[in-house]
Length: 84
Image 1 (cartoon, rainbow, N blue to C red):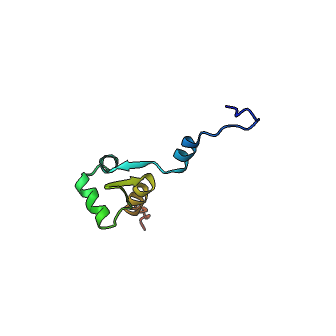
Image 2 (spheres, rainbow, N blue to C red; image 1 turned 135 degrees about the vertical axis):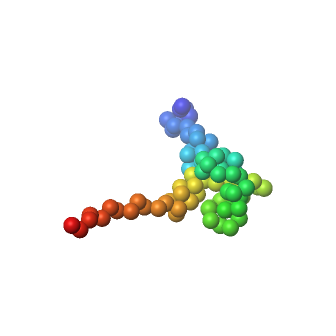
Image 3 (spheres, rainbow, N blue to C red; image 1 turned 60 degrees about the vertical axis):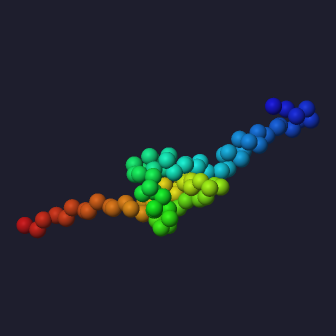
């Protein structure tokens, strides 16, 4: 799209959406983590998972969910060879 003076118009809305993280509602985040909404709300209240208030609503970023999952990850034990 040309502005007539050789400059290219920028879709400001698209630029803002690209810069902001995707937000998940409490219901969406709970479904992604496969847990109940009350469980997730409690984790957020106890600061076990990152969250943000958007007005009166509790929302989560993809990074919040990923960090929560990474913190609870248990690495598999390495098999040790048997001595004979």
